[in-house]
Image 1: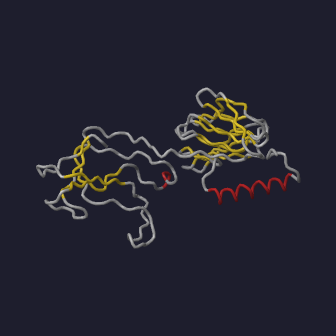
Image 2: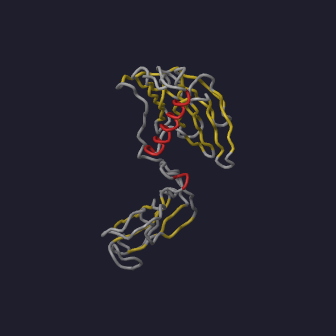
Image 3: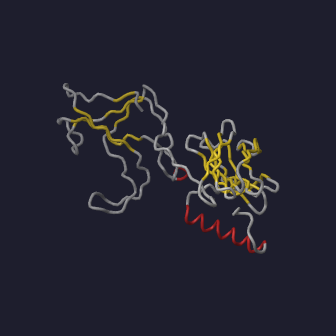
Length: 271
């Protein structure tokens, strides 16, 4: 059954959709509706045939009209440059340029497109077609479409976030200085181990970075000392550690064998 073909009065349908979206928002947390591209949030309005663009800095709203389209799901490309909107009534996907909020392309997909998701590498968009029991796979470079048959009445679709994140290098001038000491001893001049503690490898996962892949952090030049552990991730008290509510916990600890000379050499150019 295609989601837009439901029985009942327009008021009842509108209330039903509002309740459904509210429940999905509470239960799903992360979904393809709405979508965000800083500093904007994109919200589809099925009844009004528009996409509302909320400027999160000023809380002002502009609209993108999609006449007779029935916009349902929306998802953003990983680079935030394009928004993809599943048009449930006309069996298409609108590709919106977020730089000027205009429709750059319209892609035909299967009947009753509803949910939509973008692959982590941004190379494909996946559209659940509720009216044909299929998923349309859009090549985002060419807008070519492949079709895959799935179970009855598909509505939502999700992709796995890649566990691999490429963090830009700080260059050869960035060096980390640690110390010699057997774990967990710190600051000692004796021991068989070199320690480099609390090296940040990504920006703090707070605010806009929460529930997203890690973001690059600032780079430094010269030598910085890394002689203390960074924060551990937010957790309740346990036999293995104290409670913590600090989300800033993306740190790396490096332990290596002590060099024969006993000199604490620096790590450079690997950050």
